[in-house]
Image (cartoon, rainbow, N blue to C red; front, side, top):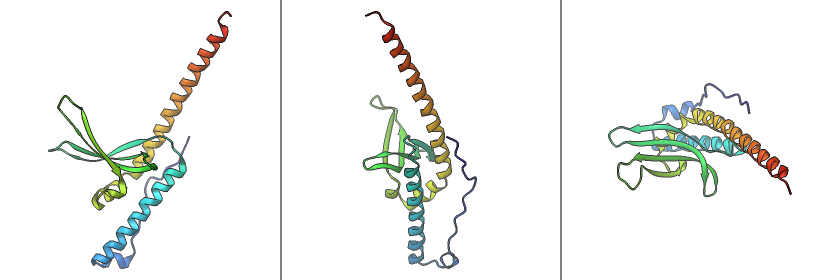
Length: 154
């Protein structure tokens, strides 16, 4: 699967929005951002990757909290997700994760996530290629098993 990905995406905000510092203008700009995020998510869903991928978007050193952007399965289908995780030192678990859909995240997290959309898409393409190799190996192993079984004496 050879996909040609753009190297840079340019998003423009209207001149009026740039010069207006009112809360209403910020709301309008945020609505525009949210629609673009929805458009990106729809494009990924329509592409039918059928694999998950994650990319790191932030790491908070003092607390050890890592924030990642994921495209993965959620209750109602494939979604853009934000995953906060922290490595734990207790015996119960090595990793604690909190996962939610991107639209439930703060505007700051959504803004940061958009800077990693292309990186996430590239990770999805790599994940598809890796999964295709795994499927091909499974088909070969199954074919070998079928041939062996058919070759057994009756």
